[in-house]
Image 1 (spheres, rainbow, N blue to C red):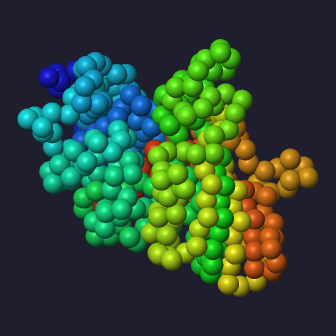
Image 2: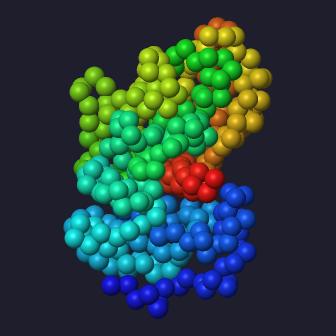
Amino acid sequence: MIDETEKTIPTDQTLVGVNQSSFLFMDEVPTQKLRLKVGIVGITGIVGKTLLEVLKERNFPVGELHTFNSFQSNEHWLETPFGLAPVMHLNPRKPIDLDCVFMAAGTEAAKSWGLRFARRGAIVIDKSSYFRNKRYAPLIVPEVNLNDLMPNKGVISNPNCATIPVVQALKPLHDIYKLRDFTAVTFQSVSGAGRNGVDALVREMENHEESSSTFSHRIANNVIPYIGGGDGVMSGEERKMIFETRRILNLPRLPIRVTSVRVPTIVGHAIAIHASFSKSVSVSEVREILSSAPGIKVLDDPPNGDYPTPIDVEGKDETYVGRIRRDRGQQGLALWVVVDNLRKGAATNAVQIAEAMLENRSA
């Protein structure tokens, strides 16, 4: 049991008038009314821990923090930016009423607990692929399709970490030029496979005789052109991008060609995109469109080494675009897109969704 007297939560007097979020509507509401019971499922994973950082940085109104690990985990205490919190079991016999739940524990946990939390009144944002093909669970990138969020009050699905930057870059261009098709090659870091992926790379870099474990081949000094299970023709990661991009952009028949590659970097996914549009494309105008698009930063001066790389974007929340150039005629465009897959590709996108849900509820 949690000793309520030991929680490090300020008193009401301390909180009144303190700005708790970057959302303007929240700054006008007494903070004690915004205190939320927040749950994180999968707290000891990489995304779970990144969620803690993002919640704190964005001043998300956490009043009580409830952290959960896998079904088999032993209870222990975790130091968080919101004080010491117990890591608890997900116990169906002892349900907890929460206001907002971030799920980063895989498909089995999502299947067993996503709707259970939602039916008890919680906003549930799930990072796994379980809800992404469910019509009742909107698949949301706030800068792209926030209107799809309303009037949902249950489970919201967080897209794949490689899909998010792709739709962010293509949506503002589609609005102007009308996207006709695109090809993407992704270069995805080992943290996309969780802590096991990071550990595998570290072990293999330290020991050149270390056999592969997490991945089908050694990842150190190597690349693997097949991510996730599949039917032998297309990998699971490639199928996700095709399905999710079509759903988010509301282009169900959009021709998409994808090759997903695992590369030996710790953090940061990069995507080479070659897109065709129905209208003639102006490169200078594309730079202006993307520079003014929410959540995007343009770095595009290749002769002077000005283009995004995974190291450049680590720890940042924006999607970075560079190498913008015409491709295959007047209606073709090539882009190089890079994102921190743990932040905007996962945790930050989820917190942005929760912020938008709170704003909708207050309206």
